Amino acid sequence: MQPLNVLTWHVHGNYLYYLSQAPHRFYLPVKAGRPEGYGGRLPGLPWPDNVIDVPADAVADLDIDLILFQSRRNYVEDRDILSDAQRRLPQIFLEHDPPRESPTDTRHPFDEPDGLLVHVTAFNELMWDNDRTPTRVIEHGVMVPDGVRYTGEIEKGLVVVNGLPKRGRRLGADVFERVRSEIPLDLVGLGSEAAGGLGEIGHDELPRLMARYRFFFNPIRYTSLGLAVCEAMSVGMPVVALATTEMATVVENGVSGYADTRVDVLVERMRRLLDDPSEAARLGAGAGRTARRRFDMQRFVRDWNAAFGDAVAGVRSRVSDREDEARRLSAHA
Image 1: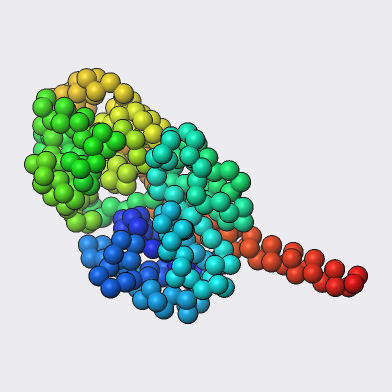
Image 2: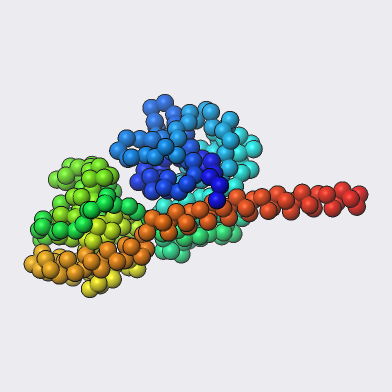
């Protein structure tokens, strides 16, 4: 397909980096001081040339083909930077998370029967009340540096969660502390130093670090599927996780790791992995197979190309239908 000019906001940097592998131009509005959503090409990621910063007050003058919202704020408030003509362009809402207010009865804010609501997991699509808006699931696609493969020589588990000490039970801060009292764990992520963690690790360095740990542990009760999980599996790392949200379909017990809602059972599985590196390597190989099947970057790009193409074609078709109807009415006037 022909490259499109897509306007979006910097909401989830790692996801945006992977999305930028699609052959389109992504324009990011930037404001002075780079407040939330307006950070543009923030440091820490190897942004390609098709990701372009633009002053927020110049967005209305851009030649744009499609608007990609990534948060309620984008859709409700940040659309103020768009021109009237841009607000009539094809619209996609990329929903990164499951609903927070109620897990089953929350109406999604993107109420656009002519738009497209993209969920990153089937669980998220299931739980949101999407009402009349067309939906589609595009699972994650990730890349890891060439040659980075699981070795597992560090006899610990690795946890990757940003802001875990402040984000409480939903992200499993209590589960992490409980397990850490019995199993050696290292915590990585923004603000992790407050919990004795290693701090934030750069995007390219994280897979290399992951590969050296015996297993990846995901203590999160309720959120979307983390990209770090996909990256860990892509380097061939076994995963131990709570069997909640989409994780229940990602980790296959005894094949790619272990998933359970009983923390004591998970602790026993971790002990086994620490005691038996060959078993950890076997499960890591299974995780790698799952990652190649589900989180392939070429599949991810194809899915997004299809979504962009369908959104643009749908709007053009509806405009054409309205023009045809207007001509028909004019002819009979």
